[in-house]
Image (cartoon, rainbow, N blue to C red; front, side):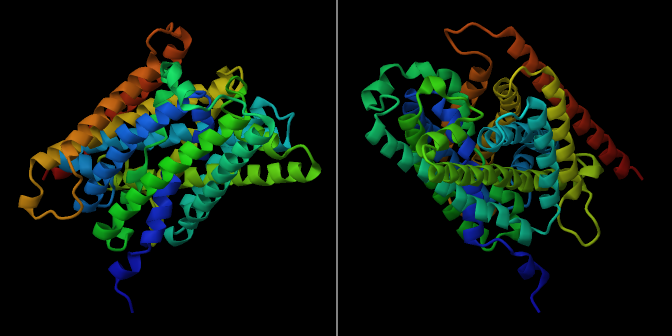
Length: 462
């Protein structure tokens, strides 16, 4: 009979490669980046070179030299102590709960454009709520079963993006390109897409997610860096190709961030009955990738939160799991509860699906970028302490501190650009909605962290 440790190693190199790609390769990201227009191609190249590849190399070092259950939580805790580990885990986890309604609102928007044109905003909101709880159900399954959602979702992402890229370019060659895709045009006014730079940076995050389940990975010191580097390179190629295809077929001014995937499919295939069926089939595949992405993120985020809760740094409810059950069910249920509540609350104040999506996305994205600042600071701290002297082995990123400093610069710029773009007027209403949401989230996190510290002190008393 296999030992418990051997039996627990349920994630092979293939599993974590597909998992990592599923985390960072997002079909909805194609829609967001295409909204930038022709300059999106320029910004993708910039972000890939200055952030995606450096961030992947740094994360690969952390994931192999410190292969601890919890991933980013464990690294920050090791570098700066339990308080900062708890803070970062809160931000990392609550972002997923805030991002979930944005993704599922896009799901409902694409579903409406393909299958139910008369769907109201509130019907889309309720569909999003139902998907939140379906995600919790998947999170309650054993990892050996739930891992197949990202495993199957990743090939579907390849299919959808390849169709968008190849189909869009063929459409442009046949009907004329909807946008001028020459390098000269992309470079003519690159600052035109500056407001969307944070969106592109956001689409490059998540490769560290595989390390949240380090105890379940077979030979992590060898498999993790290979999986992360593969994921980074594959994702970069597919993002560029998919964005190119959408811009070839759809004029930039007609791009709606919520429905563009459906519009692109209909533009490419919808002229005949067979084409309409193809558009709906591929659109359904795109919807499946949205769900797979959310499952991937909640599996990793809920595990990190459960580890912090087990350590007494977050409420014990978030570590709850049935006896004999390894899934972090308490964190999964709370994630879906928060996501559902945010959908319902923001649905009351939104005028249109796209406005609701952008507000939710911006709110969650700002929260999400903050833990990566801490992760790179933790990397610099751990590097300065000399891992080799402490017997730490594994992959070592070339010029690691320089790469990490570059990532910190890009992350800081992305956070600023969510609030304010140079040369453009401030949107007071947007700033109030997003700013208050971010501030309230930080305050709630501090309350939870300090309550956890008080519980720890009380437990230590004789």
